Length: 553
Image 1 (cartoon, rainbow, N blue to C red):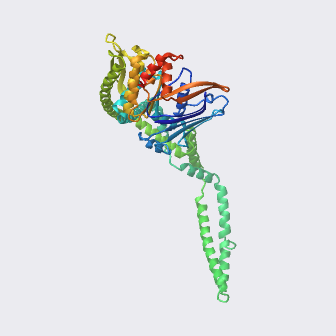
Image 2: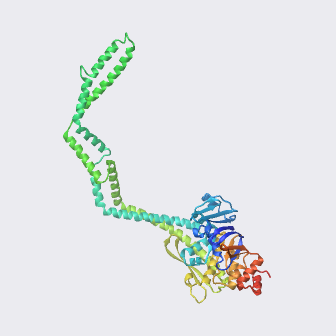
Image 3: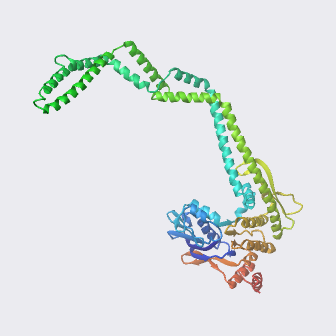
């Protein structure tokens, strides 16, 4: 629950530090006194986007800080998931705004993105303003009310997963159908391309080998000339290197007996002789292998020309890329040939997942129908207490095509009189009737969701007298068992039933208009409620009436 709210330099507020209690509290004040400013500040704490214009005129910085007690609401998992410090008894949320437009958010002194602040805010406070009554006309709001009472979050999560998977399969099926249709239209062309590549009988790495062979044959004469020269230098009988090396070896070997040091030199010379003799033999073999054949060169170059032609045609750089393309074409042609099987298999998967979703949706429908009957009975009871003895209320659940939230079309049907047919709420209910209906719904929701704090912003519009008192009693009920309900009201009947009473008022100062908020004692409450009853001129009768409402007589 909200324990403390500190505001500095926010619109008309210079500085404000207010402590709140649990249970049912009320806030009163004249129109324009600044009640909406207080709500705006709380909205910033809950993740609303900030505007530099929110900063008080003349100030460079605005600070809003709220302290919450989370002891009874099991929120530790949220803090751990977002890597935030957790203090159940004192959770501090702070927003800082500067005149330059910068905004910073903190949760327990750790910087937090606005998305996290908003997610936490939705779990801490529900602010119900008059415009929220329009939600009654929205299908998703009505369905959400039923799901809260049905406690179907886990079943909804399972359904959402199944529905998402079904849609993925549907997209895959649609893509496959499009691909097959396109491939079938291009089947002849794909077959022609495949036949051309397959007919070329390409071999990986053959391009490099052919290019080497072509280069060798093109320079065959130069190669032979160089090899002959090397062969002559190595193997000539009288002046060849090998012959001279043999003579040198013999000379050194011949004196090794008288000069032992030459034995090692002779041995090394012998190794050189053996190596050079082997080289000479290989050079001689190479000479025999080099044979220029113009017809073979034509064959090689023609093959290369064909490869280059295919690479250019199919925008490839290598034979390997052409072979990859050939394999891809083969796969596409195979897919066309086997398309009916692939389509049938994927269609079966879609149908199977749809059947699973239908079962999950049917289970949701049963839960929702049971919860709807419970809501109907509770709403009728509460609306009767709120001065609508002949009210009729029914939740219509009809089947629709599977959607993100199941197969249920929900409509809240309403009639305030016996003689008026039931129609969707937004088409028939007056402002006062909608306010009472929303209060009844919020009461039911609060009992189910255990939201720590609920703030009603003038939900009493269009009601008065005994009905207003009944509305206050319902808010009292919501404020029991450690919960916190705060009502901004113009009705003395509601203000009188609050366990704590705050007043918002404006003060004209030398630096401009400033809004204040103060907690009223018993005398202050009497004066405030008397003024609400009689206007600016407080009469004795109004004072007595106020005391009676406050049970002070």
